[in-house]
Length: 515
Picture 1 (cartoon, rainbow, N blue to C red):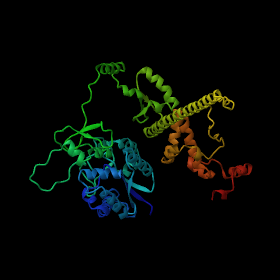
Picture 2 (tube, rainbow, N blue to C red):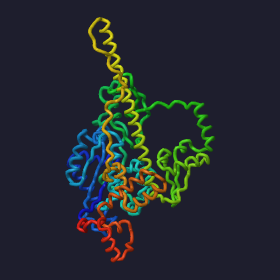
Picture 3 (tube, rainbow, N blue to C red):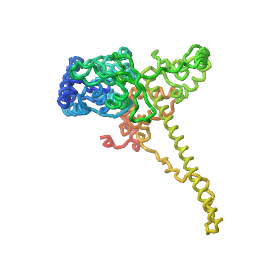
């Protein structure tokens, strides 16, 4: 029995929102929600694994969110009595169960996305992790991350999608199982914009919203700018009333319009330029009615018939694809048959190439910024030297005693940085961090398939990283361990092995070395 087995729920808390009746109870509500969620998860696991004793599994929950942003949102739509209620709820939730955590990543949707994606990538091939309940089904941006996992049966059965609100249509195309925890999470979308608190009973007609009343009582600008919701608006609303509201954080001359509910109303888009529209149609005809954006993407048809897309910039890391691009440009097609590589491995190749293309672009931008900064420092030194020389000449003209002119200077940088060492290092030290993490999540067979594909596509850097990674794995292995790892059959007789050890004993360390 493995006492270290666990199941984990990875939840994007900005979209999978806890029920407001739990949140209004603060810490007590958080504790009750944690116990309810734990019971619901265990019930689901028992149904998914009827022949396994899941009582020995640990239950982990990670809720990733922008705590301040969601607190502001709940308060603004009258689902929380104060801005501090959600924080109190989070404390009670985390304290109630030792492995339950609220992770506040602050502002920026990409912050929560990054944390959720990396956690999924870490857990999906973790042997101790027996099941994953994945809960960002409000955001179809995660579909690209999930699709490759459908190709692995073990992973496909390991992941269950948590549905809270109605997910986008694209999620229905995924083959993963589904689960709902309606006793814990809201099943309705959060209202969009600002809703006033429920007023006390009154027969008087409410006063209309005016620019002055908005500025005095409600800071719509702060509400709109502090929370960016990815959830589509489904509430019905009144006919917009264009009301200019002055932003308290921006220049007094800047403003935008809101309707009676405080929701932003954008003006109509300008009419399309007739010449640009005609030129666009002509370009489409020149391309054979192919969408112009497709010129930047290639389609690779794998050995098992799957179609995988890759950008041209990423494809250039493969010498084979770079040569093929010249041919397909002449033929007017963007599909390349790859009969030697299956879809599973091809997806890994594309992932590495796309990530490396982004890294290379960032490095080039950084180098360009450093060049500009270097040139700026050179000009600053030159201007300072010219100013000192002008001052020296002026004092000399006044008859003052001055020193000789400054010696000529080539304005070269004096801080060239340390010389890089050429000493050979451990393979694990020369593999870039991202590439090492990329390879660490793969199993042995996947790495072998990947290095074979890298050799086929002639991707030199990826081939080297795979070779170094394998060298790091087999380092300090005995001969028998290496044979087992590489699947090599021993074709020597015991007598031949003994003779080899006698002739080449220097190459085989003492057996105790492996203990």
